[in-house]
Length: 353
Image (tube, rainbow, N blue to C red; front, side):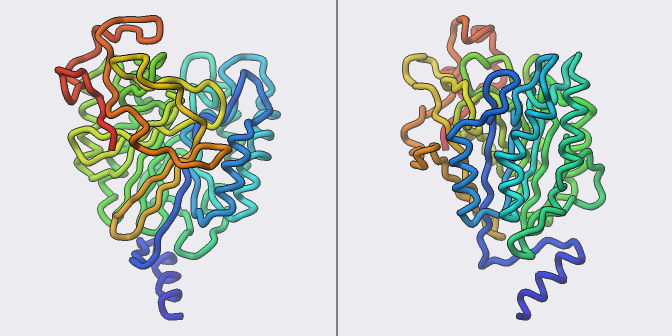
């Protein structure tokens, strides 16, 4: 009784709850859409949401591409309604908040897609914000981080127990729009009380998959890429979660941050970047569970869907490495910036963890 009262008091004071005996579980889903304008969702997505609802999940994160936009003349209201029917509403019925982040097919910041961004903003302002979705327990309550600017539902920062989750508006290669670097730095300056820190968004910092070798935040600006990575390391961010590349890989670089390419639950699976293209198959449809405690201990599991079987880390390539020659599915690979390699002799970007 006293412990529950203490937790309630800490939440009321907007202080982190450090219940060391508790383990929190979050699920991470990504790239759930199909062909342009589709209002249908795959059996893999439906099964994943069903499993998440039945598990002890406190929160779901989406790393983008929830609807199949980025083309004029589509029925965005119908697409978003279909997504909410398949994902948002079932989760809300189970008191599981959903944190969205825009993808290039949801709300591209590229020229000509202001209408899509308006639809994205409107649908998530009409749908309950995370703190109004309820929670399964008081310590699972999601709240916006105090003292920083919030640009819900594009880039924002929320807390849950000992964890800080930072969503980015990352729909374009080569940049973070609206001076988000400065904003992210201001958020991370307030992150010290939190033992678990995760940043999530659609486009990855560095590439993971063929056909997307030039489609990453650091493209064309090595200094920015390294500055962003250094910022994450400085503030001891645990995970940088991204979608867009439609291929699952748990990556590590020389620092402590773990860079995870979240698998897709829609269509359009891709092949992981390796020096030998024939060494890997297309990534399966899957989703992630991350379990953590107040001590900052985190474990991750990837489940294929709809089979719900684990993906063994040993079944993945040992590293993501850039081929030495250009190809149709690896544009400008031969001239990839060598400064970004962790192992220049093998042209390695990430090692598997």
